[in-house]
Image 1: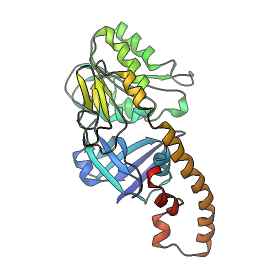
Image 2: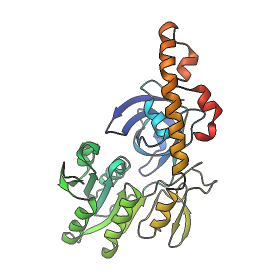
Image 3: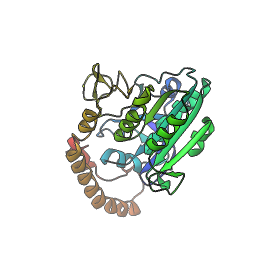
Image 4: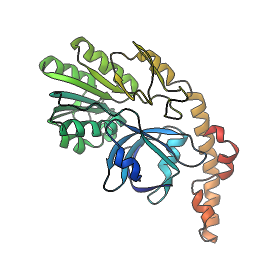
Length: 313
């Protein structure tokens, strides 16, 4: 079991957890990810390592509550635990003294870009960071990115903070005015990374993207995370998660991300409806009975639900 040491709400659907994982923290490097499971019935969730502390033996995870598993994870509190934390997995970011670099992050992508920015700065690079979100309330970790950057540009779609517009607009202006940039990184929604790659392509600027594809085992055995590149197929888990953004077949990536939307919606709907019905009963029972091991093992609802339908996790 992997104890939750800290938890924070970063924005409407984004939460941060600091999890005790000593062996993982000792080995974690920028760009790598973990596979976590909330409980013994839960699906395997790939999450990029947002930060790590080898001395404290902890890793920081930031996730967006989208489906059943991430919403379930979001209900856990400090002192509770995740059943599994496996990693670090994937190929670490290639860190070197490139010179002047630009990093672009959108939405939840701000989390995984942070350790990359930090490592690039430690390697002596000059860093221009561009971060963005739909609105101010969805931005987070501005202070952390700022602390490692020589220049920070903030964009919001609605103009509620920073400059109004997409991160790609700011990036294009930067590339027009500064010809000394040696390399770019982009992490965020797939469509955003695609547009960043298209923005840098005319300038022949090497651009690295991090692909969070459909993933199951995370060790290259299932083939579910395969990515189509100009030179052939690769696995995001063992060959990535970082790839040359100019080589990625983005239409294939975007299409594959839609494969299980119907099943994900059904799983979330089923879990939420049963959870809502059983939690009031559990709370009423707990008013009259002392806490015991059984209630601690399943504080969020329905043992019968998860046990009877593991295929919906």
